[in-house]
Length: 193
Image (cartoon, rainbow, N blue to C red; front, top):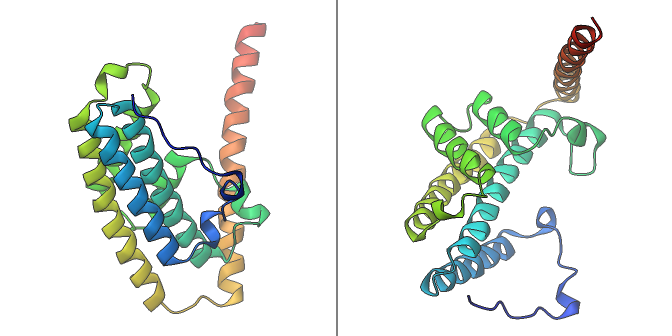
């Protein structure tokens, strides 16, 4: 198993990705892919997989955030953004619903998310799987760049449109929570009978 060099403490307080420039992100991904390739050469497939999946997850979150910012005006620190973030699968559904990713890409990513959720079966993660995951990341990265160009060309939404979209997002979240509460109450009623 390869050893990852220790990072000096001064570098541990890296800027969050949301504050990184495009060049800084590019450099970070370049280093990530170099590390992945080195891990593959030493047959450390689990570590290579984890880094690759983390990069894919980061790309999905970046695309989700970009779309949310455009649609609602919510930034990283807003309560609305935190309240409507249901995790990676919800981000994926949102990107699909908004048309940022097509059904084929949705299915590919959903499949690797399911695989990740079964991580305890470590024999599934071999060199070919990591290479496939890297290819998927590169495909998604092209879609991300396309989304970025598209949103930059779109007209900016006016404040009332942003506020309506914010309201819509929060109403959807409330309805989702209400459905969950109804299901739990039904279980309580069933068990108490």
